[in-house]
Image: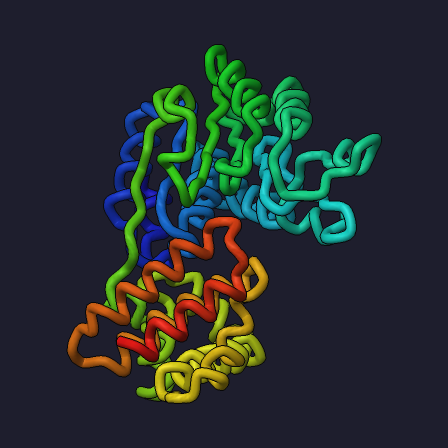
Length: 328
C-alpha cells in the first residue's frame, strides 16, 4: 500500500479509487478482475498500469522494483500482459508500433481472414490464455485489457471461463467507456470502480505556463478529462487543429447565411472521429456564445446529434438542422 499511495502525486485526481486499490493490495484482498468504468481520457488505463506495477512489485526491494519498472515500461515483463492497440488490415499493420502498447501475440489477426476492425476476438483472448499457462515470475500476474466493450460475444465467453477458475495470482484489469454495454455476467465477476471527470482545480497542474486564453480553451475542450489536456499540450499541431475546429463551430453560430452554415457542417456528412469532434465543438461554441439558454436551438442540436447515430442520410440531416434554425 505504501508504494501505491506514494504515487498519488503522479496521477491527477481519482484519489478514492487509488486508495481503494491500495487497500486491496495491503489487505491481501486483490480481486481476480476489476473494471475501471468512465469516459474517455480520464486516466483509467494509466491507473490500471500503475496498479499492475504495484502488484508485480509487491514485496520487492527498491532495486528490484526499479528493474521491474523498466521491464514494464518496455512491455517485456512476463507477468504484465496488455491488450491495447490491435493489428488491423490496411490500418495498423506495423508490429513494431503495436509492440509499444500491446504485448499479446497478434499474428493470428493477419492470417486466414485478416482483422479489419479493432474488435477483440476469441483468438485474442486465447492468446492471453496461452500466456497465462506459462510459469509466472512472481506472486502476481496481471492482464490489462483496454476498452473491453470491443470484445465479441465469443471473446467475453472465453474470458468468463478464465474468470470462473482463474489461475492463482492472476488479476484482470479491464477498462470501459460503456459499462451498460457489457454483459451482466462479466460485470458480476469483477469489482467495478467508477471514474468521474476532474475539476478545473485538479487539472491545474497540467496547465502550467498556458496563457489565460489557452487555459480557458483547454478546460472547455477537456471537459474534465486530463488525457485531453496532456495530448493537446504535448502536440502543438494537434492543438492548432483543435482550435480550428472550434473556430469553424463558432463561425457556424455567428453566420446568418444558410449556404455558409451548410458548408461549415460538411464535416458531419461522413461518420468519423472528425464528425464527432465537430459536433462536440458545436455544443461548446453554443454554450460560449449564449448566456441564456435557447431551448429551441438546444433541442434542434440535440435532435441532430441523436439522428446522426441512425442510418438516415447525414447531409439531409444537416440541411434540416439549418432550416430549423433559420425558422426558429
